[in-house]
Image (tube, rainbow, N blue to C red):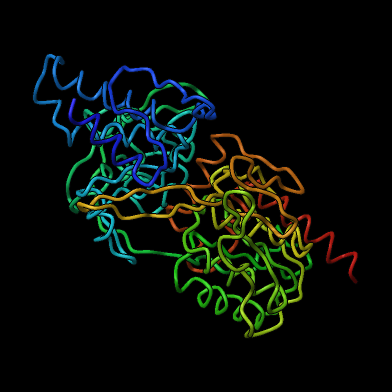
Length: 427
C-alpha cells in the first residue's frame, strides 16, 4: 500500500508526532500523551487511501479506476456534499469557464442554480430559445440530451447547456407545481447581454393621476448602472413622480453593479452589503455606494421581486428595504447569498468553494432565506407564463404602456397601487 503511506506522509508533514502509516492498524496513544483527536484526519485519510486501492485492485471495470478518475470523483463528492455551489472543476471545465466571454454567450437563455430539490432554472430570458419553447422559471432540470442531471455537478450542467450556435439540444424538466415532466427541443444561439429595458411612464389605468415610472433590470453587468441612470434621467425629464423598479427573474451578476444601482437611490458612501467568512470575519471591505451621483433621486420607489430574483437582485432589494428607501412588493426571492471563490490547483484544475455569505445592512443573511417582501403579491403559474410571454413578444418596446396596463400583471398592479398611496399621502 505505497499510496496510503505516501498520502499519510504528505498529510502529516510538519506534525511533531505522526502515527504509523500502516493501513488498518490501530494507533495506540503513547504513554502519558494526549489521545489523538477524532477529527485529526489521519484515520480518515488512511481509510480513503484503503478504499482507493481496493477499488483499483478489485473493481470489475478497470478502465474506470485510473487514479485521475477516482480522485476527480472523490474531490467532486467532497465539495458537492458541502453545498450546491461548491464544486471541483476539472482542467477541461475550468478552461471552458476561463474562455467564456463577458458580453455574449452561446446557449438557450436560462440561468440555473443548485438547490436541495435539484438543478433549478431560475430565470428564462425572453429573447432566448428556452422562452420561445415554453420553459418557465422554477422548472427543475432532469435531463440534458440523454444524460441525467443528477449525475452532473452544477458546473457540468451549465456547460451542457452551452454549445455552438445552431446546435440542437433536448432538455427535459419537471414542473414543480404540476409534477409533470416536459421535454423541449431547443436550438442554441448567440445571446447578447441585455440589462435595462422597457423604461416608460405607466398608463393612467395603472398610475392614475400620478406619473409613475417603470423600468426592468434583467441582470447586473458592467454597464447596468450607467444604463439605468440614463433611463431614469429620461423618465425624470418626463415628470416622473414615483418608480417601479422590476427585478423579477433577475439572476444577479456583478455585485459591484448591483451596488451602483443601489447608489442611484441612496446617499454616497452608504454601506449596502458586507461579506463574512468563517467565524464572522469580514472577507472584504464593506460594499458602499459610489461617492458621486448624476442626480438626486428622492421620489418613492417600489421594487418588484419574485421567486426568480437571485443574488445581486436580492442584495439590492434587501439593502433598499433595510434602509427604508423602497417598499418591496411581490414574492419571496430565491435565496442565493453566498460567495464562491475559484481557487486554481496544480495540473490545471480548480475548486469553486463557498468562502463567505452576504449580509444586508441590518445583518440579515439572504442565503437560503431570500428577501421577504413588505407586501406579498403572487402570480399563478398561468399568470406568470402570460407575463413572460408578453415581454418575450416585446409588446411595449415602443413605449406605449397601454398594452402593459391591459396585461393583468397583478404584481405590477399592486406596486402601482402602493406608489399611488404614498404619493397621495405626500401631497
